Image (cartoon, rainbow, N blue to C red; front, side, top):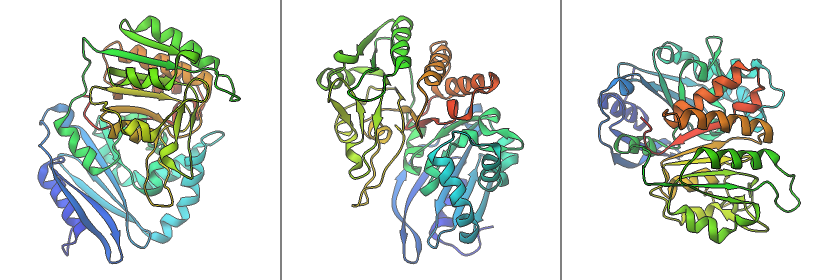
Length: 375
């Protein structure tokens, strides 16, 4: 399978030898292909049932435009390459899907599911949890909605995204848990300047405040930048419902819109100490987009929370509807507060949306990104 030794093949070999993920490499695109730029030693994960049934799917854009794909489980690893010419033919479909799920049919989901996940279908069907490590355009894809064997991926397994191999490696040494003494911070901004009002956000905040016993709830005018940042560093759970903005000229200024003209930017978030923050729910439009600046740096809102120390973030890849967001959030918390992990709770809420016949755009944009494990 491997043939001549290359940095890319060596990376895969390390993953195989670890049984799951013991050492991770990050790669940079050099003129002569990919070369390792950093190595991180990562503790081996426990060999329990959850670990044995976890499948990791890694995508890497190669020099020249081809897409290299690995599916790595404890028992088997598969590697396939989508040649540059073929991947180029799919990129328009992927870009359209990444920009908007509204009105999309299963055709695009089936097409991309076949090329990106089809070679690993047998491994997916034997897994209970799939961790996707995207690269390039695949960062924008709603993997939960891609079709494998006639079903959306989320109907087959729990789906989690890891932003990099290094973050994936950290997952083995970290654990998401509920702190009995922790406080939750709920921020709901249904009225913000000239932006469209969000009655669903208001209902969401009122409902959550009743469900969570120990919580600080800042709504509308109360949600000032100073009050939000002061309480964030003490919170173990943070829920935001309101408008978000993505700044394409300077991604660090992408922000959650608070009271008045206040904005909690990605740059400000990344400077906070959020090491106690176990779970972040960002129920606003485009909170998961990582935009690339002219200098080449990339820092979206969700990534900023992870860099500040948050262990898991539920984010959105696209614009989301106010009413359906309230429904999905209500279902998510029903499962999460009932004892399920964030990944299990999100999957259960998405399955409920599918079963009730809700549109793809009502559930597919929501993605769980983990820096640590939730199980």
